[in-house]
Image 1 (cartoon, helix red, strand yellow):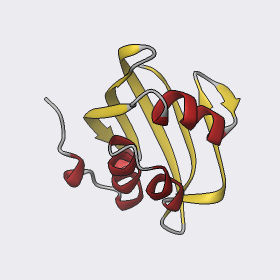
Image 2 (cartoon, rainbow, N blue to C red):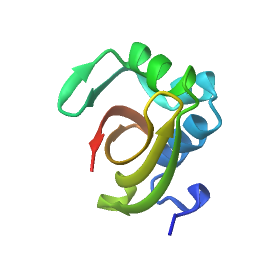
Image 3 (cartoon, helix red, strand yellow):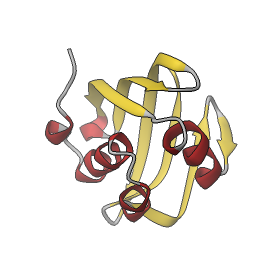
Image 4 (spheres, helix red, strand yellow):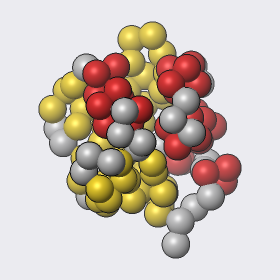
Length: 107
């Protein structure tokens, strides 16, 4: 069963998932701090390059299964045109109402 995006607990995470699922680049960067960092399967990546490749050019989409840590940790079915569907975990650091770091990987 999935959690409707509008019911995610943390407002910044909710806005992040909403923008990602809408493939809205400007809205996604608006919800992140200017110096946002991220990692994929434990390796730090360039945020813009990773988002272009894994989300925007490949129609990335998250269906959230569960949340923990006040909505800052998610387990989601993630799919895109490159890799298909996979079960993923996401952890978000939020500062001043914006995402300053996110970590993702296979769950």
